[in-house]
Image (cartoon, rainbow, N blue to C red):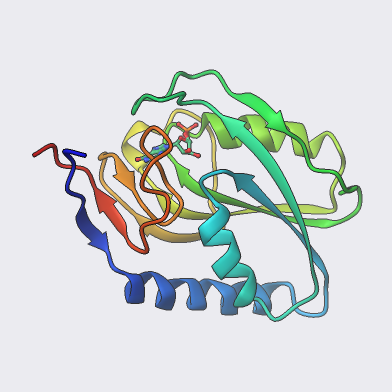
Length: 174
Ligand code: IMP
């Protein structure tokens, strides 16, 4: 392949930041159980590492949304490919996302999940690109804010590739 990712955040930097977020979440929800909703596919690596840093009882759910197809710009249309299987009514829901770009994915997801009446609903995201934000989105637990550039690795893909990289990188066409 003709691409050579440049490292933006290395493995150790990500690990340390996730440990900080886990400690903050553990503190904020002390004495309660949370339902973590992992947004597939991109958030699976972040979510797997984050839940190991949360010292509380957790019920894990998965939901799959897509908005990009195989392109690097959002199509603006959010499709639900897979829904959670458990109930969230009356629960503390923590949605775990890979990246908030336009915010349309998370806005659509929050509208959908709120209609199921959780007790509380918060958002954890690995990355945030504020420049393209079009929706009203608050990120309660954010690992890193980045510039408007296309990133891959640590679960994030370009045309379904690079998810396995242990770091977050930027694609530079060689
Ligand atoms: P939004 O709806 O524009 O906020 O886009 C959110 C979704 O687009 C994320 O969950 C990712 O799957 C994808 N996405 C946005 N920016 C990037 C990127 O830089 N790299 C890989 N995927 C991205």
